[in-house]
Length: 92
Image (tube, rainbow, N blue to C red; front, side):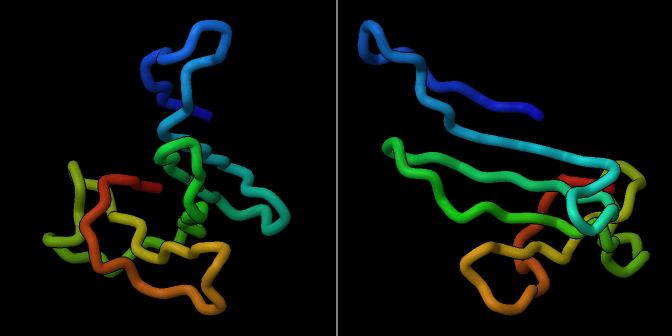
């Protein structure tokens, strides 16, 4: 797990967490690899996004540093999973 912390702004309080990244090779309940990340803005966490480990199509434009990108991102507040429309550098 990796967490990015912001600057300490108030004495006596911990610095705010800005980014939470949690890759798990064994997954959670599914036993499949999972990458989960979430961001925080003004002390409010957004909806976590998860990549279930399924790679995208194996073509040249879908590679990042020679690895196949993960394209199936899911959010907790969405009923169905959808293909990502943004380029990402998370790889499995």
